[in-house]
Image 1: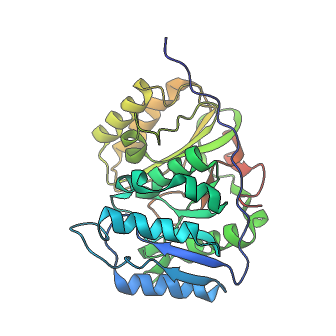
Image 2: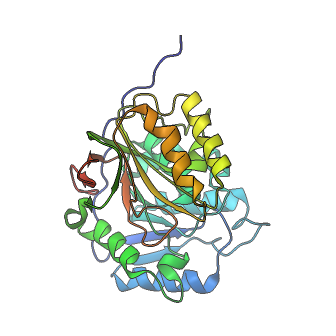
Length: 312
């Protein structure tokens, strides 16, 4: 008989940022556009932060921002710098999973709590930090992406990240209404999830983090309905959704009109509160969602509220 995973418990919250804090910006995945990186760093510095960019951030190794060893070294260096308070990933793409086994997790735990910011390919790092370091992480805009550092950045996305980092009490309500009810009810649990494709890819790895007792937040980009169906089936069959308390669907940019129908068809039979329409993921705006934090979902009211601020 397969042993069921333990119910998710709220993770430790790193402390909020303050002007003067050091932030490391690292490229863990795809190659960067230098101009976007410069604009993103300038924005972070305008918040009063001391920004240190990873030494290999602008390296190129095929589709990746440097070799696996270079990307891992930059992340390790930023996290273990005694002055660092947060590590902001520069962009997604692919490749983050390739650095996980190159990191010295004992040294990272000894360094103390840090805030990790990123989404998409960074989903694997969110899960690794949760499982190995027991820390809340922030699924939110990244430093060298269009939403944060394009020619016309999305102001709502940028300001929500800033508020989460500096004044987390002000953004405890992630949705005060307006979420679409798919299955009614109320639920409370730890937020878990991220980009659907990455969640499916981590099944069977140490980063696998099932949603038992938690509130699953899911999103993806440019995945046709048949692929979404396949990935959901993978997670359903391997027990990822066993005991989930509720489900929140984010944005499904460029996934086509059948994506929503497929998601509801596969997830509604679980019989737990299910909502859609949270502005979380690859579309605009991009809310910052604290994974590992406890939240309350009211599907009938269309609301999602954090029990405590994302950071202490």
